[in-house]
Amino acid sequence: MVIPVGFGIYLAWYFWSGMPQKDKDQVWNIFSRFNYLFILLSLLACWISHYSRALRWSYMLEALGHKTNKWNNYHAVITGYFMNMLLPRAGEISRAGVIARYEGIPFEKAFGTIMAERVIDLIIFIASAVVTLALQGEKYPLMIDKYNELKRHYASEKSSLGLYVLIALAVICLACALMYFRNEKFRKKVNSVLRGFGDGLLTVVRLKKRWQFLGHTLLIWSMYLTLYWVVFLGIPETADISPKGMLLGFLAGGLAIILVPGGIGIYPVFVAAALSFYCSDYPVLYGLGWLAWISQTILIVGAGVISLYLVPKLNRKTA
Image 1 (cartoon, helix red, strand yellow):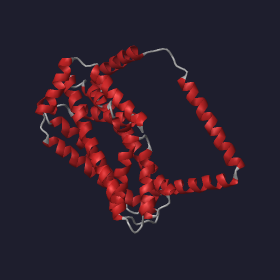
Image 2: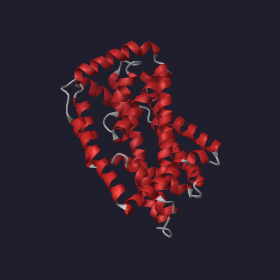
Image 3: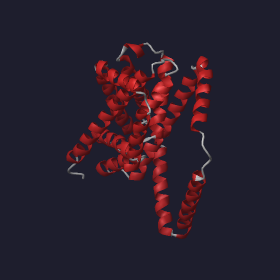
Image 4: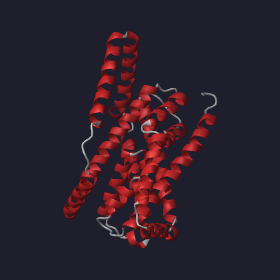
């Protein structure tokens, strides 16, 4: 937990310390004159997306033959987001663990539905990226120049770290393979987990409420875009950035969240870098990137702590 969070804090310090003082002053100025009504709108959109995801998940669990309590689903989803900020991929495990404990669903099946969700989200993200980049026509030369500049700036001697990682992964895979073929008890456990995992993944094609599932999917991603977009309406300098520019920033922010848990430290940098093709005032973009990230993080941390406190109390008979 300490390593990813510490790395994110280091990145935040690194980028902030490298800014000229006048740019730092401009960032603080953004915080003081921002219209925080738009933060409230962003928080509302963020919460709606999480609640909608919980409802959408219930359709997948129902396809497994389990009728679940919507609030247990919601608390599991929020707990997952909260844990993901502390440790990469811990959110999926904790989310499946919560629903398995309080709804009696086999962990591996619940985890399989979450993985199916992730596949759907990845497909949507890739499709959004293709559309967004296709809209950037006149910006391509600038993007290529920026890429080459960053490549020259961060170029360094090749490291053997990648080779060490591959060797370690190969050793782990070999050890698991030997255990699988030589230990019957281990093999039966793995086969049982894989069957449950497969059942969870197949819920997408077994859905009984396909249209509701599709509707919530559209709502979730609409709210993702909204919670990001409205922040940039809070000051005049960025209120008129074109939709294709905002989509590019949204894509960059999503990429930051994928690369570092919760996007800590790099979300504002990625968003500002993307939007800099449409607005030259980088400190303003950087400051708004921080406001967007902080508002989302406050909601996830606050709601996560509340869910961790409430879910056992709401399920005392099943805990």
